Amino acid sequence: MVLLNRRQFALAGAALAAAGLGSFGARAETFEVTRSDAEWRRLLTPEQYAVLRKAGTERAGTSPLDREKRTGTFCCAGCDLALFSSATKYDSGTGWPSFWQPLDNAIATKQETGFLFMAQTEVHCRRCGGHLGHVFKDGPKPTGLRYCMNGVAMIFKPGASPS
Image (cartoon, rainbow, N blue to C red; front, side, top):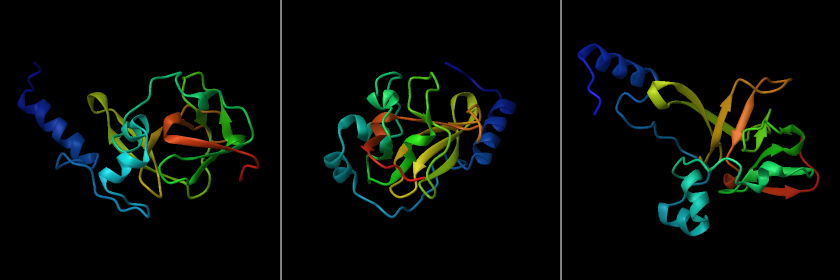
């Protein structure tokens, strides 16, 4: 059991407030595509539901989309919004599909407090709010970003890819 002294407790509270979680809850957002929890459970596989709706993470190396090399578009498994072009996909060696840039107006991000109050940036679908993964500042040129996505949160559509 971990006990915090008064100073550590105050610092933890300040970190939560800075992250926008001062009330220990996430900020409410509205999205174009909304469904009840029961509807999401009916539409998604259990694995998709765990990631998209409960911000889970699939085990590294388990998604066939990590090895997908064809030309096409990676879309949200929750609402079918086009998210990433295959032209921006690269092998990051992490075991998750990685991209250096999303399509225009496809994703939204928010800062979140992770393990030991370390900030990280969550990536979610801007249309349905489904959790996709995280973005890191260790990617290749030209953006220097690595959009590390859960493959189960996306579907791949082969063919001409939007730019």
